[in-house]
Amino acid sequence: MKTVNNQTNSKAEVYTESKILRDEAIQTANVDFLDKVKAVTYLTDDMCLSVEQVTNYYETSNSTIKTIIQRNREEFESDGMIILKGQELKDFKAKLNLDSNATELIDNRTPSLTLLTKRSLLRVGLIMTNNAMATKIRNYLLNLEEVSTKEQKAWAIQREVGVIERKRMTSAISKYIPDSPHKHFAYPNYTNMLYRTLFNKTAKELRIDKNVKDNDALRDSFSKDELALVEEGETIITALIALGFEYEQVNEHLRNKYIKQLESKNIKGDK
Image (cartoon, rainbow, N blue to C red; front, side, top):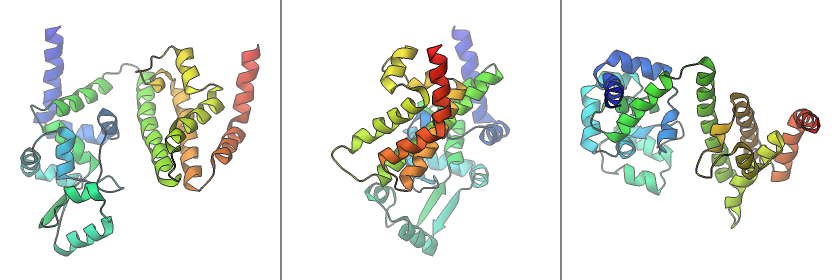
């Protein structure tokens, strides 16, 4: 067993030594998996990050990240890294309309601000050694590469896409649904609305039906086609919530779209 682990670790470390392999991984990987490994805090809606945010993600020192960037500057510039100074920095701060968290990450006295992309966040993990989070990132990529069949790869991709769509839906609920003492119920309510529409079961009933434990992710038990349906449904919910539709209106739209599928399932269930 130790030999296998050593081989895996050795292969993962190749990323730290090879710019070619890093570029290949960044070009082919869906960088959204970074949100799944650990929640990412972004500085802007287009997923820019400061050096401090990258530091927090990898739980390391600011100087470590700055050294990695300095030693591999061309790589990070190819990912879209920019450095703001002077008026550009002032304009960026004004446009950002900083909230309290972001204010802590950007010192008003700083003469320059390095903005990194999500690709840069992945690149740091491929370069940095002796860091638990970076090792986890590299091993995740290797595990994804080693998925054996096309069907499994397709499922893995669909699952990653679904994670992002789920996040968009919950963000829409947070942003567009008015605050109230009962707002926290909106998240499970919309989820159960979708599951009832697609599968005629609530999340709790699906867990029982699929024998999924409370601590395990229900969606890991879904097939690729089921994941695709859920992703499509959550995309619709996100759009309708953003347009100001109420809960019952969203429910009606979903049922109208999937009514034939529901009827088909019910007929098969009766046989």
